[in-house]
Structures are given as structure tokens and as C-alpha cells.
Image 1 (tube, rainbow, N blue to C red):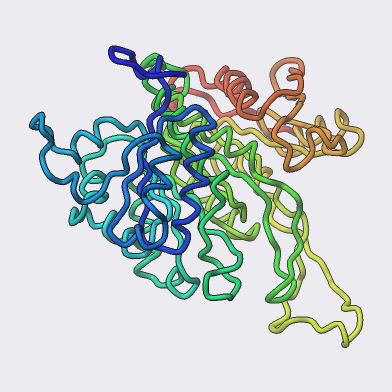
Image 2 (cartoon, rainbow, N blue to C red):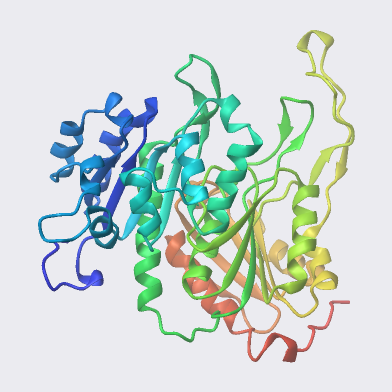
Length: 429
């Protein structure tokens, strides 16, 4: 979609201001620009003084089709405008990739000592940040605190991820792939556009929504765990759509590498016990609780203190059940609308109906994960929703982002009236 004078934001291409700071991952900015342009975005690049040592401004200028912005743009333009103010007003999304530990700190503290941070301080739209640094730096409390501060203010953090580092080591701190960053930027731009186009009143506007997503990892020893193949994509899509509709959304996420949806408060957990504690803390204040997480049913009764050696033979692993979070939700949050998910490989309807009653849920969303086109990790899903009041509802195979909206439309039908006015559902016998 082209842009032109007089065009509204909805009528033109998304505008992305890409801030590049001085880390070795800066060379990936060229690929990020290429991907964003291929998705129809207009891109302008702003480089810090140290970034030019890692990527040539001319490269980004050619790929973006626009002059690269730098320190000289802090000076007033010939028309009397200030360059950093003009750039902040131009952009729909500000993306900083890579974001070094130093830039993270300056963004979190609101410093404005160069062109990029001055633009960031003047920018009012969604901020996407892709941290990149050595594992030892990412592990420092100060660095994590700055990242958490940005997240608490609504910034979308993408990565870092585990992988090869510039030092030759392998660890957490590698910048997320340009494909993942581009997807997060597009999602942020889409969410901003959609929220501005939505009517002020939707069934979820002002509601509190709690979503769980992803797998849990139950440790066997310091390097091994029991888990499953859940990607978290369905839960993240539901959280993103609920936030777009004006809900206050909290997302409890298992160990997945997906970017936090815009406007969503995220709590990261690893085990079923950690997820249980997070849900117990958040669910009592929720109007709608959507449990998409594929929580492990069992965990090792004991966790080895050190790595179990192959030379010691095959270990005897005794398992114990994990907490049944969905089953306990009715007692924990009796007035919340509760939604469970069931991933089945056979007997879908029978298992789903039994689970709906056993878990005392309002809705049970079931899908057949034996089908590769809608299995764990797929970008599309096909589900049947069983409900306490009414016949099942079938949703044909469709992208998870689209399905999220249709599911929320269905769940919202149980949200009639203020939360305090809704009677608690009758528990199953």
C-alpha cells in the first residue's frame, strides 16, 4: 500500500522507524529492513554513533530507499522543524534492533543524549525492542530490570534467544531472527491501527482477561525435562485480540519464544507449579479466564541435583501428578467465565464432554492434534467448542489470529452484565 499526502493512517503503508545501536547484531538490520519492505512497510533507519562501525549507512539507505538518520538530524531543519520531532511524528512503530544493554538502560531511564533516544522520548506509538548482548550481560539484574521497566510501560520485547554469540560461546543473549522481529513490528502496527478503528464499547472493553499459553517444562535434572510440543500461538493470539478489543489482559506464558502482544502484561513461568501460583494470584480479579496452556499432567517426583549420566544406566523415574489448575479454577474465581482447551488424538467429543464436566468449565475448546495441519506449532487451527449452556460450536480450519476473534465473540456471550452481577455457575455433580 502506497503512502501519500492527505492519506489517513488506515489508507497508507505502516511506517517503521528502525533504530540500530552499536552491537555486532547490527549487521542483521539490513535483512530486517528487507523483510519489512517486503511486507509493504515504509522504513527509515536511525543509527547511533557506534552503529556505523558495524553496518554501513549507505547499505540501509539503499535498502530502505530513504536517507539514514543520525546525529546531524538533531539540528533544526530548513523548515524550522526539529528532526527528532519530525521523525517521531512520522513513525507508526519505533523498533530498536539490536538494543544493546546501554541503549536498554537509556530507553528505560528516559535519557535523550543522541538522536535515537531523543526520538524515542518524543515518540507516542508502540515500541518494539530486540535486545542483543552477551549472556553474562543479559543475566545482570540491572539489565533485566531495565527490560522489565520497558515491558511494564507497554514496550514489546522480542528475544533475546539462545544461540551462538559473537564471542564463540553459545548462550542466551543472541538477537531474535529478523523474521520474528518483523512479525512483531507488523503485529504492533496492526494492533495500533485496529484499536483506533474499534468502537469504544465492545463486550470485552474494560474487562479483565487472564490467558495461559504454551507448555510447561517439568525438570528431571538440571538439563532435562518432561514437556510437550505446545507453541503457545493460540494463547498469544487470544491475548492479542482481547487487548485489541479493550480488555485488560494478563498472559501467563510457559517457556516459548513468542513476542509479547501489544498492550498485554506478561508473566513468564516454566513449571506447572509456577503457573498454578500465577493463576491463583491473577484469576480472582478476572472476568474471563482462558486456559490454553498445555500443562504437563505429570512431573518427576524427585529432581536429580546433577546431570543423570548415561553410564549409570537407565534411570527409574517415578512420576506424580501436577496441579489440576483448570479444575480448581471454579473455587478460585467462581464468578469468572472459565475456558479450557483439550488437545486430543482420538475420541475428541467424548473426551471433551467429560473434561467439560470434570473441570466445571463454561467452555471447552477441543482440537485434534493428530492432524499435522492443526497440530502443535501450526499457524492454523480447527476446533469444536463444547459449552455448558448450548450445543457445540464448530469452527473450520483458519489462521489462529482469525479464530481468536471468533472464539472471543463466543466467550463474550457469557459476560452479560457487570462481573459482580453475574451469578456463580452451578458446579457439576
